[in-house]
Length: 183
Image (cartoon, rainbow, N blue to C red; front, top):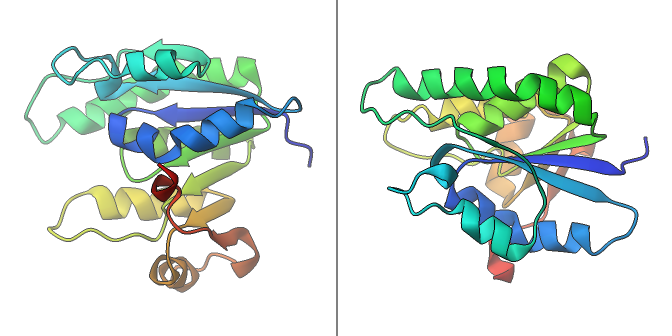
């Protein structure tokens, strides 16, 4: 498998910050083409309009997708996920990337991984196997994304063990530490 075209999903400053240096390194390599699908809180003025950080970093944007609902209801995140998926399926299919990158445990990762699975595009998931406390939906979303992903970049041995426990193959798991430490 030859990887040339890469698309990454990002919806919030925290997931972008985790991989922004990695994205810049990809762009410095002539053989790769990287574009981001930007949605969620990045496009909200109330949340700081952090898409501007991406623009300032010079990372190419394939599309800006208005997917964030201004709501406190339990269903609003599911609706945001639905909007994002509906708005990006054709974008991804038409761009036809060789790899989709997703980060963490939010709506964007599940959208990207699901689209990749259906379109038969390999998915690289960063921070799979991590675990949060408090009963949030984040853990099931992260684990569902890991099951849809083909390549796993984990930050520690505990996360690696969790992925192995849910049946992921060792050959697809890479314990790279936390890329955010490079910042």
